[in-house]
Image (cartoon, rainbow, N blue to C red):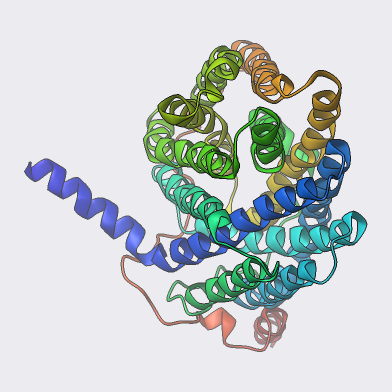
Length: 432
């Protein structure tokens, strides 16, 4: 018992300085979860063809790609706090425009803007968290971060049941949640990362450092987007009503949430590559059988959704941790952008490919896709681990220690009008 209490205190000491990030992430993903599902439902109610629905919603992930390549320049120039506040404010306003006019192409433009802003906000948070962690606790911190994302997403699915006869109410609620998410992150006591100097990170360089993170992020993007964008379509096609659809999506995300911390702690103790490979191996084996039980409803629907989510939503945070184990603080913002880029490639292409084959062969393609793509990763991982061993990567990198208690709202580096101003000042002092 004393040992258990001691572990709880250690976890509290580790996570309490980061509470603002976790709360802000939770609120932001309540909005994101509800927004993703309500758009899919409304498009389906308007009798939009399944392929067009997948195409429209994939614009969101196309924007992720563009954002991952461009928004890091703004973050490095103005700092994490200002960039996050600006991007999420724009996102909050874009959501309201969906209520003005239901047109697939108009919504595609809005989804592009929303994807760009959210990806930039995630780059701020994820690079900030990785700067605050080291190789011994990164898996735990990222798993708690992902718990907040999936808990928020799951909660957002349940809000689908709120009556909305006007067609405006849910979009207003989404916008309000995005605005509230700004408050804890903007007022956090955690010092902002020092971004006066940063290194360029290319996809080739990242692949050379951590190839399994590259492939894992793409596969993760395909599987996660399959749940978010085509999950509601699949549920309706197999005969689930709106209530069972929301339950299915809720427990898919809850399965991912419940698996985060155990898997994260496991990845802190063992080779993260093996952890990813065995997770995908389990998903490969169980996914095809779920089709026979999901439409039974009740406990079988819940159990199938939990298993599907547990295998799907834990891959990305391990990929993040695996790469960040091997890079330094001045590489983290662009590295975070590259990982978001890779996942976005999967997120954008997944719904297009899978929705096309769903239209040809029916809803069974939805569950078979999990088995197919996870099987590809298992084959790649097995080949890579056998022929390219990576000993000792769990050694702690040189990372500034995370303060055990909150500090002042802004660090010294953020007291100037911009980080570039501070860099010029330091250069001038050194010159004289």
